[in-house]
Image 1: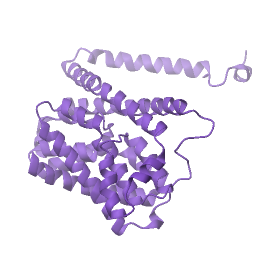
Image 2 (image 1 turned 45 degrees about the vertical axis):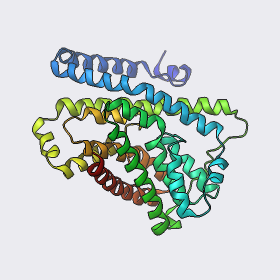
Image 3 (image 1 turned 30 degrees about the vertical axis):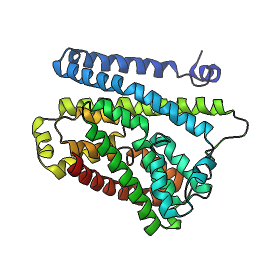
Image 4 (image 1 turned 120 degrees about the vertical axis):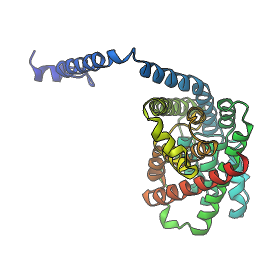
Length: 328
């Protein structure tokens, strides 16, 4: 059979034999090149750190996505709007505190906030909830306590700094935000006609768990590489300066984009840095990272995402620094 005939008769999505063979050969070459490294002590150390971080964080990631999926599927959006005060200035801290009892992952908090804005909730309150829900929910706080055993002050510092950042950003939007920056997506995020709640729960949980799980594995691998490959002299350069270490780990949190249910284990592994610097990693990560910036740009518009993410990063670093200085 010639190539044209095979292409017409092959099932959709099946790669041509030549591409399949090329892919197999490439994988074999990569495996052959990597095989000598498998017994290297550095690789074994990397493997141990990566697996340990993933195994420790996975139960909390599973629990967090289960709770988030249940909230999104079974709790109507009107519950949020009715529970908030009519005064926007008062609604901001209430919405921020609601994140403690109404958990959601970073990916889920963006469409929930968009739905709240469309239902008439003040944008400042919706954005306070957007920032606080993935940062201070019960699963995140418990995972932080497990990752930092015997350090309840780290849990308290994360709670205080995250709530302060969420409230400050809500009030800043209330004072300086402009409607022309805000372009909510027309995509509906609530209950869809023709879909059962349980089907929405299953679909949402499956998507969030696989999506966040991928970022968890990538984050664990990056943290392991960071611990094994980065020379101690480089770490000492950043870790030796209080503010430089805070800025460095804040930037690392933006790039790694680890799920908030699992980021405490990554932060705990960064033992060369001060508690305040690791607190900055925990506060900035759930509020500003590369995937959240993309989600905000797609939902609210690029003008909003650029301004809001930049301001949130600055406020989160300041709140983490002040809180760490006071509590840690």
